[in-house]
Length: 116
Image (cartoon, rainbow, N blue to C red; front, top):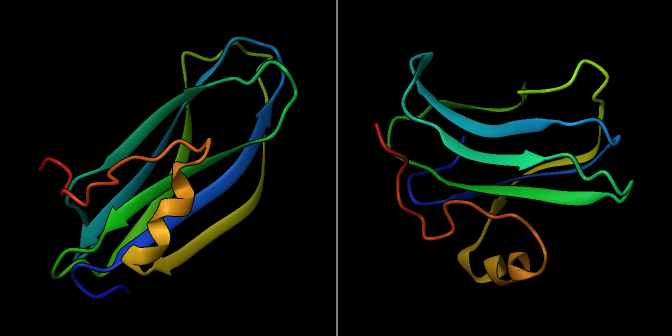
């Protein structure tokens, strides 16, 4: 697990079919197996068949002993499909964050804690 203040990158490439869909990606920190907040990004289907990268950054807090990364469907048509590839979970030094400013979706870039 990361030390308090360290940044952890959760990154995944995705594409979808053209059926109507919305998805929620989240990082959930846990202390003693209990959720302690959530970092969320909601995204919709790509419909153009292109692959896109979704990146979430979590700033580690004290006593967090595990993290989970989830992608869940919301308001999704029964024929909607999502394909996922190239999952990355990695600690980041602060100096490396600038590369994420390209065309990626980034949440919690400021390093603020999620609401309790």
